[in-house]
Image (cartoon, rainbow, N blue to C red; front, side, top):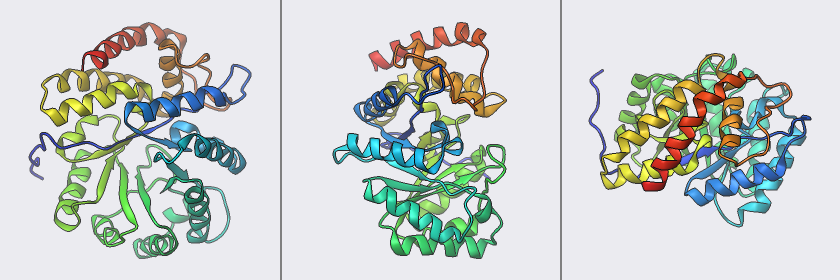
Length: 313
């Protein structure tokens, strides 16, 4: 397809997945997590919890519920997004998603339907029906297209399915994580012609400049430096050329952090946040993947430069 035109000056909506930090002994560091959530709001971004960056797939339902309760106590009316995660549970996925969405809505959050194996096995028509069922009982929710390079139960919908789902007013946006610019551009074109108020949240941590073409974002990379992302977004809106240098440094960080094995980016995030003095330990989840300590020498100059760029923007 032809590359679409840029959207200079377009305000960007940023949703940032929040890292779940851990103590060296494997205990969840809830105090550090609460500070990161507050910092996300303070930067002007919307926090997203119980996402991949929060190790949602390694937590029990009880642990995810505990995190949801903590964020509810912090929110005081401020918006947040939370993953409706049902992978591994038996039963009708529409019912399971509905149950999770109800819990999230009662806590004051906006649900995002995390992909799962049972929905991956459905036909396109059946998938649409699941979304219609959720919409019948949910005031507002977000969909999630996730490529198999992230998880084996990921799924990217057909463009026709995407177009059909736009007819659900309760579905206010979709996080698109195919790592394909072309597929995301196609969705933006359908959005613009069919439902301009709909949000396409890029999940492409390797192409965070998709905001230049009209995407918003829901990223794990933004958890590393919410202030730098917020500054970058403001620069784009005001037409300031410094947007490009800041975006380049953030993408440099993204290319390093999201190298194979990709799930280890969460440990990179913890290393980065500890270097910034924002969390006391860079330990990942006890069952999470590790990065080598030698990465710190590469991350340190990125921390310094992004701190400088965020401060002057």
